[in-house]
Image 1 (tube, rainbow, N blue to C red):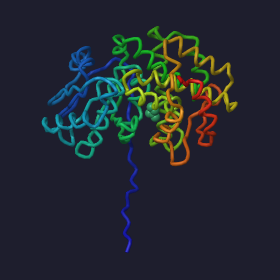
Image 2 (image 1 turned 135 degrees about the horizontal axis):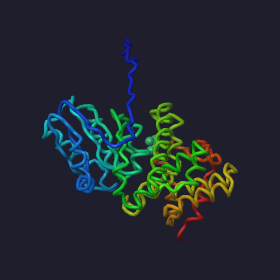
Image 3 (image 1 turned 90 degrees about the vertical axis):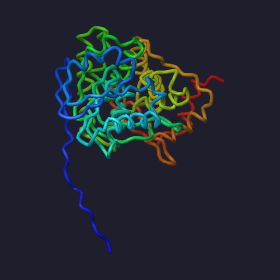
Image 4 (image 1 turned 180 degrees about the horizontal axis):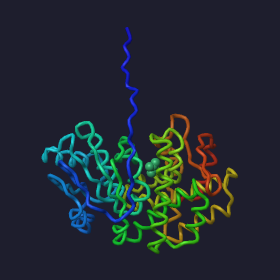
Length: 349
Ligand code: GLY
């Protein structure tokens, strides 16, 4: 006998993304703010002055991608149980992409899932990581290999937080904006090429456009069945670099920058991008002080690591390759020799 469980309900997961100075957030129930000591030191007072809740707890976890692991998740969950948060409670991700990923993951699994909101404080998390509900952690096999899709209830993007951002963090966010321009919006790329984002008004315009692109892509393909994978342009290479360097040498956005340059070289080899276009992208990355080179010690090992990428299967690796500036293709048919040829140009030995 076969029984059927009917689960075809439509659930509306739509949520607002506010791009404005933070207004007062009211919440009936318990709230836990997940943050790190650096963000708490700089901005917790600002957040608390705009938050009203029945009970509010602050859980601080160590800063940095190298701490985005199961141990930290256990630590967060323990604090939530100690404070007796329940299914009606709310988590607030208050920090950069690492905090957002971990807070979202903890919210997704705590008592089988509670609500959370994102208040991103870095440029990278404002323009990319906080939107779209990707949550998770790294393990020794690679980056973001454990996690779930759990959409926030709202995202609050307040450019005020960026005033204290170190230049490297700022540039890392610019890399993600360039990613979106190169893959989806040639006019945005030209605009970025012509405007200095260190100018606050230009920055705000760019944030809005990047978030608009991200939101449109996520709305079409929430669970990354196709189109959304294009947002991983630069990441297939970048994740390997991050893992090889133990998440300590580069910021995530910096490895995306290097990965974009590598992907562009593959695109040039395939005739999908002209050397002039590749040069424009590289020059713009360099203008913001982003790294564009990485010394590969073992090309074969670097290539093998692609098989752990979530887009890969046993026999093929999916690469996100730009189609000129403003277009993109997902390619799982690229000859290994061509990819290894590009990687060999970065070989240190
Ligand atoms: N950061 C890529 C994505 O959210 O799909």
